Length: 580
Image 1 (cartoon, rainbow, N blue to C red):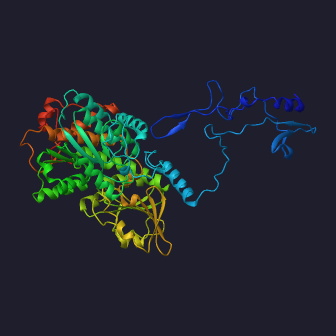
Image 2: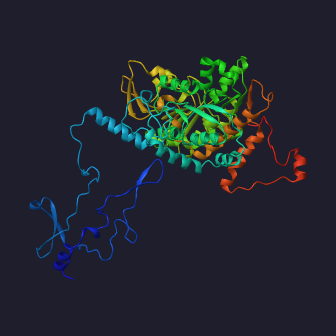
Image 3: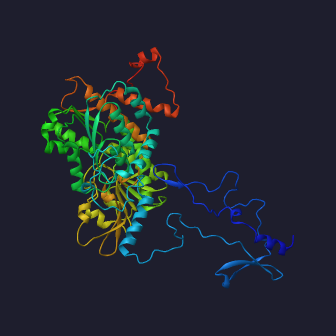
């Protein structure tokens, strides 16, 4: 075929023959509750994008392309004999709803609004799985809004009830990774072991917590809930719960005043008296002791998840001020050896990546504390090629760190050289102003413990230091000489403030919490005194067994002779109650 004929045929190529040009509007398909994606723009039988069918005609290499200025930038192919053939004109792609070209630039936009736009997009890209949490431009405090769900109920306070559909999808995704809770819901739903229970809760309000709350409701309980962390609430999940009839008082980015107001709204309702407490950190228990001590006359028990909250309970018990039984879930085997270890092993990297985009290979990191949380963090960072140091007060944990290959140091020995500082001790003032002053420029500082007491953030709020918001939950704190550190979540819990945690691991903890509530609520009078108890090992083992089918795991059974030799029941428990 001659070059002239080829060029002439090129002019007849229709737009539809070029596979990467699509005239119709692409259809958005939400594949999960968090990430809307675009449906593939190739019909069945079409070639993959970027590849042409054999019938599509393209110019040979001998044809040269030029731009004709008289044709407003239109392109043409110049053949060897000098003849010119016009190339097919490509339509400009437009937004179907806005009719705005892709190359259109914003004009006359103020610096503040532009900065806000950048901040919002950063939040959407790098924030927690609650991808709709920070995308609202509504700055009105939820406390100033009057919201009602589709049934006319307004006993809640959240960011935006219109996000309920997105939250419902996230909850449905979480249900797939929480087999034990779903099994518990199915097995015990007919018996309603929590019928008559009025549970007031203060935990992280995430999709995983929503599955727990709906399980408690299916087992007969009434629930009212607040958040235990001002940054960890997934707004769309809170909306889904409110739409489902739950009294939820929480939103992402609460102030300290909002935090206590939400807890008070959960507790202080005329005609409603809680008889069970599910706490994470001890703030709810503290508030009831402080404001409504008479409520404990009808409360049957407290279930506490965190090391901070458990510490407070033991203090109350020692002082003789604990007036109801309490279940220490934090020190149960299913919490310590799974949630604290495996959850943090994965979520520490997720939180740091989403907030800072840091590369871990070769970075020097100091992890303060080598409990189960510290072990998980160190293992993850070591696997990514980081040089990891550990600080520890306990000789046993210190020896474990040494035998795991980590160098045990004092914080002041390495504070000038490390790139990342991570606290996970459950203590206070682990990283004080002295250490913050000596850190290198660009050092990342974060906390993996429950409370925000480990890093002395208050000491950084002084006139000589400048705070600069980079993106949601990421701040530069700048010294007069220009040195800056990167502070994450203002020293609060990194993984639930800045990213997410593995749902399957939370299924283990949530199931343990549910069984602890059932145990305390149904226990005959006198079984539990006004003290702090560990979950019986039989229940720990039951929680673990509910998760084994997910892995198609098959337990070996003891023979009668073996059981007699070990002095065990064939069906367990296989560990003594003091085992941790």
